[in-house]
Length: 256
Length: 256
Image (cartoon, rainbow over all chains, first blue to last red):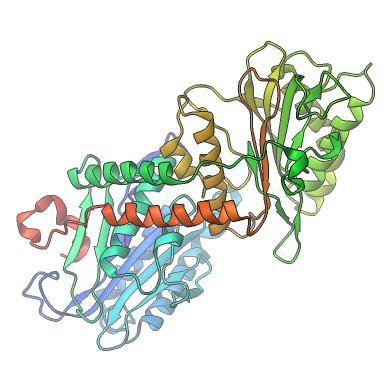
């Protein structure tokens, strides 16, 4: 899972907020959550209205404190976790939405939920503003939220269900980096986390800040390679004699 | 200038309509507009609400029939042409908008106007729904309208004011092809036209239909090269020992 860290309420109100949140549970509280074997790995990614997503994350954290309540540490399947997050979000939307609507403020937001609980299969869900949710499947093995269009072509051309997880992580990074280049509402640091199926631990994560040497190297290599790829595309075979190629000649339209 | 040909009013109402229109004027009416030297080359590209753009194009055509009226064949600068198209569009919007608004129908549309009149410099303009307009400049040498985001990264990474026109044309084609792959609201045929500064004639144009051998070749070459470019990007250098690399270790957030 990968996310940028930029939020904005207009171009004169741009801030940096983390959008990846770790709700994994270590089975051994004496160890770091990252070296321990967890009984579950659950990562959340947010997009959209910051006040709504923050309030939702806060509510999810608060619930963790009370073992009597349903929360992300005692829930038993990822599908149930998605339903519970959607339900928590609906509570926040119920409270906030009418006030935001009054001033025409966009109250939409989305969540990605990925991970694995115990021996159940790992899964990836997207939860909508309305609290309903869908799941990634082999035919559509990735999900995006937020500013999705700029970074979509590289995902469409590179990712399938068979893609190695290491390549998928690289692809996610390039996708976000492409988006950053084309849209100022997306910006560093980039948070990146990779989970290996059935490991129940997070061994691979990083935060790439502006100017990070690896990020610069990746970007430079990608741009050089893209330019070479572009140069290898055969030049356009223009049809100059239109009369001989009626297939290509009907552009002139109403003027002929 | 390049355009796809798909329009839709919802997924169950998809149609094919040309979006490039040629308003060039031949100085010699006995010859084809494409082999003659024109006194002007003017190409229009449309996006957005089809009823509004069609009505505007029709009005522009009607005006051509009356030499007493201001029209695209007697106007003397491209800036004036942009103003005149904006003014014509405002007339249509005045008539249509209130009825479309009643039913929540999007009445927005955009036009690109590119070309050259006589010995004045060539220029490229974008005309907004509101009839105002901007011009491409060396710092921002291309303009997009319609479904712009998917095809933007390749333009951002490849095009500068110094790019050769043949490469710019190839880039425009790849940009639209990328968009077609990621978004079903964009579809073939692709109309493509290239104008050489000061030639006052259109020597390069084509219409690429679905399955066109050149389009298939370009797409295959591009996908192969992209895959190679992707493979050349160095693998992610994950930080596994988080304690030694505090720069990369603060992801765990509130759970640690």
